[in-house]
Image (cartoon, rainbow, N blue to C red; front, side, top):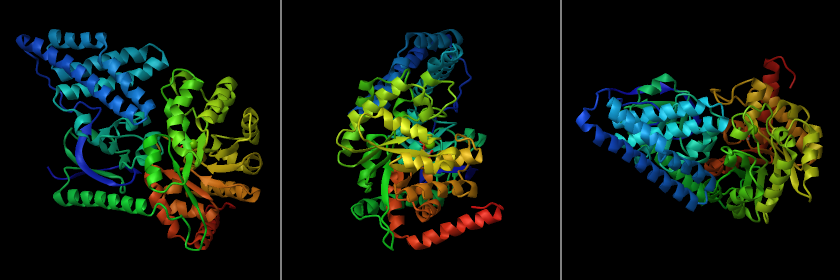
Length: 537
Ligand code: PEP
Ligand code: MG
């Protein structure tokens, strides 16, 4: 078979060639019925597959725990309990012994059945568990069929993935291709942080890719190529090598400051929420953390986490930032980051927290305790009014640097008043773009931050910060996009906070910029775009 190219959208840069690890479609359904004489052995094989999955997950959980990634370890370890669940085991055995199903199919079927039951109970926590059960079934079926995706690693092929999935699978995965998904989904953000090439929106055609088939994921062009010819495979390998070399160069130059050719100093910070990201960012010369997404550590929480739980989660990351900038964003729950206990809420970010003042007080206390010794900056998400920032200041019992995210149209419009209550501003171009243009964050096929309607609000926020004399940071994806970052610098950004894997590249881009030219270009862009759309910018 020749090359088959599927077009999608680039969600994380880079190119990789490798064997496909198909996660959620049954590529190898075996319709033959197992003969009665063989059913006992087949059932044993199925149960053994569940045991092997439990042991795989235990090992992975242990490795994550040893690496200080306790939150991710817990997510993985839930799977151990599911794999050893007697009810699931009994169901699998029955399907083999009574219906003559092959082990892999019985595992799929039993997991599907159990998952369906869980999702129908009407309890959001259990509904969420349904996906975990399917994931265990999928792994066990792979084990029974003699394939263990996690053992061999490769290019992950799936319909959609959550941020926890990516973090869990990342150690073995070299690239990701999704049938659905959006470029600013949190799964994509985690992939970019870890430097994994990712293409999303590949559509139903992705279902034709078989487990083990050779593929190339081109995260730069946004395509997946199945059965790549020798030339393409070689070029993908060369590209991967070039990325490795660029990374090595970034590490070599990590001590050199990021200063434009005409002398403007821009601080480059990292968007990092885990030790793995922080370590990579530091290697590449990050001057601290510009965005720690605390909510990502509690996406599976069944209730507001206690003080102790939070300190235990945040401390391992923050203790590595002693003496350095640690910008910690308070929980940004809501939208695609809604834990089970908040299912159904309409609010997002600071509004959710202000509605739960006791939980917010505990959260702030935990952050102050866990960030002891760091240059802590508290960042407030989804701000819409200056009052919200004032409320956070009031709840802190000592002077702490507090900044506001400018990521809603209301925040950009109220930027002056918000700036007066804030010690710094941080522009979240991901949400701002989606909210201004009315796109769906999960499904949007591209994030056009340079659209004049978005750019005008970004410029407004920059002006407000600059005139108030407080630093302005850009922490959305625009900060690490080759074209958009020039515009952000030109509009007056003092700091760029970018995914760990992009830190070195962004620092290098800054060294190649001329600030005066960037200012002129961004001014022109605003003017021309405003002119073209008939709007005043
Ligand atoms: C943003 O919206 O740009 C941002 C940085 O926040 P998050 O991506 O976590 O929503
Ligand atoms: Mg946001």
